[in-house]
Length: 271
Figure 1 (spheres, rainbow, N blue to C red):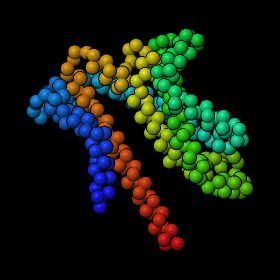
Figure 2 (cartoon, rainbow, N blue to C red):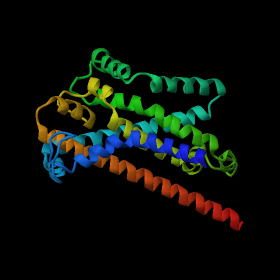
Figure 3 (cartoon, rainbow, N blue to C red):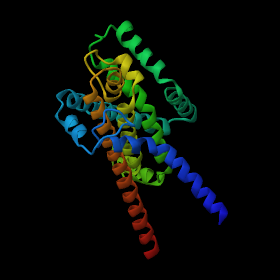
Figure 4 (cartoon, rainbow, N blue to C red):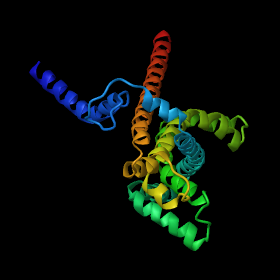
C-alpha cells in the first residue's frame, strides 16, 4: 500500500514538474497582464490579437505550410528508405541503419550550418530561396520517419507479401496492396513526427531561412527581444492553442487505438 502511494506521489511530482509551466502560461493567456506573475483580470484580448494580427497569421500560415510540405517529402523518403533497407541484404541494411542514426544524434546547429554552407556557398543557391530551408527540414525529419516505419516492417506478416507474389501480383502491386497498408500506422506516426519536428525546429531554420521569413520558433525568439508587448502576450495564446491541439490529437489517437485493439480482441474471443 505504502509502495503504491509513494510511486503515485512520484509520478504526480514528475507530471507537475513537466506541465505546470504550460498550465501557468495557459492561465495567463486569458489575462490582461503584460507579464507572467503580474496581476490582471480575465480577458480574451490575447486571442483576439492572435487571430486579427496580419503579421501573426502570416507567420502561422507560413509555418504550417512549410511543416506540411516538408513532412510529405520526409514521409515519402523515410518510408521508401525503410522499405528498401528492410528488403536489402544484411550488410546494406546495417549501413543504412547506421547512416540514419547520424542525423538523429547530430546537433541541430551542425545540421543547419552544414545545409547552409552546402546550398548557399557550394551550390550557389540564392539565400532568399526556400530550397535550403526545405532541404534542412527534410534532412532533420526523414531519419525519424525511417525509425517510425522500420518497426512496423518487422512486425508485419511477411507471408502475405509472398502469397501475393505467388498469386501473380507484381512487386509493385504487392507493395501497394499488402506492405503499405500493414505499415500505415508507422507512416502516419512518422508524418506527424515530421510535422512536429518542423514546427519545433529553431537552429536549422535560423541558418537556412530567407531573411524575410519566420516560423513560430524563430518569431518567438525574436519577439522576446522586441518591445511590442501586445504581440508577446498573443504568443501565450498561440502556445496554449498548440498544446491543446496536440493534446486532443494524442487523446483521439489513443482512444482510436484502444477501440481497435478492443475490437480485435472481441473478434478473437468470438473465434
